[in-house]
Length: 333
Image 1 (tube, helix red, strand yellow):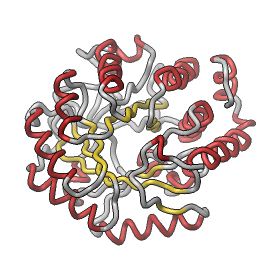
Image 2 (cartoon, rainbow, N blue to C red):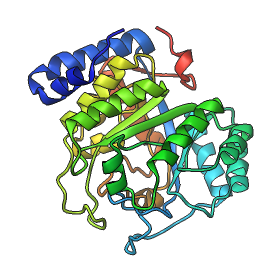
Image 3 (spheres, rainbow, N blue to C red):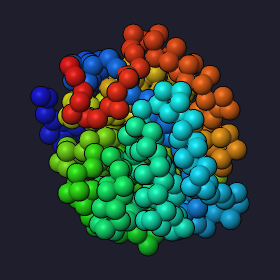
């Protein structure tokens, strides 16, 4: 297993002359540890209400120009069934931090989707230990909660009225409860340094995360960072590649933000260490309203056509779509 010191990570992140070597090594580590199968996970963004005011996010509570929506429990379950019917093995349920969706409501939804024989991933933000425990008992398998940055000062700048320590508490609770735990970071936030990105990578290693999502920062015009500089796709790919090398057998998605910045972004990511794609399976209307950042790619009316197109792209790089639910420790060499 390859190991890097913080300074070595910083040096690699700063030196673009080593990019080809880095991406090639990450792809090799991915192939040796998780194989050539790509896991497709159907993403349902079921509510764009959020109580938080994160400065980079278009869903923030203070954005009065967003068209808010909530899907009903029945509609969420029906949407999941449509995705399962065309072959998705995991359903990812994501929302803003919407207090309307109580523990009981979410447990009902998780339980309904588990009846289809698939894995369920939740991404609904900071909840209590008891709520996480209830979701697990209802059948939730995985939980995604990105740290976004491990730089405490930067975290405080980006997340008014939120607590870095509580974010860490959530990750610890989820590990304790036996979830597959996903986290990740934004690359290119204002005032972010390569040193803090190196710390992020080492943090992922320290907590032995099972999934890591890494995306470039894309400013949303209805946020305080609306005029900030777009994050570097190359730097985001480098953070992702280094994460793969340090955590060889985890699941890493080729994120939608990468495809938003480059029409071939997902394929590039899949050749640089990623092994998961999470296509949006919402209807187009809701998919466009779930606008963390503008001009999000991957919104398509015909789910079956979109999946077939993605599978064709995957075949062009010599990879295949997995028929399994893709748990970390099921990955075969």
